[in-house]
Length: 212
Image (cartoon, rainbow, N blue to C red; front, side):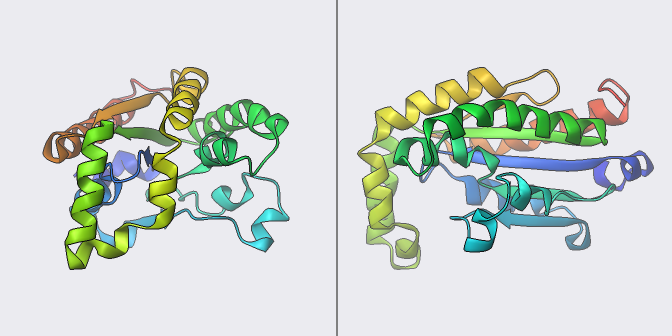
């Protein structure tokens, strides 16, 4: 209903989903878009950059998918890969990921100045819950495609990823684009919190409590 409000024609919605492996990002995104008109949103899955994307400035491949006014874009992983996976895996230099904090804050500020409502989620499970979900994916045939050797390898770097997450939240949670930390051990709780957060942020924007 909020995205069909006439006032949303001068706004757009940009949601970024990040989280631990098996934290429930995909399921949460499906619930979020279930009530949206399929013509008004795009889901953008982010994987390793292509050769073309590597030849461009880092944020170029994300700018390409920013929605026009009256539309929504939901990023399944996002521009935060530089300060998370690229940092931990060493696939960029320290200077690159250190510089990225300021670049990302400027990027999100520009989105807000253009009327976008930027909503960012970090979904966090406990280490034990993640292990339970990994084993479940291995046992259930239709879920087996979700678990890879890379997931197990990332799990071995749990502490490094948690340190990166803490730095990310501390340095990129701003007044206009704050992080929402989602307790994801309980999938239903997580999904309701995400839906409620998006509604509250949109309501605030449409009522003018966020900067025009």
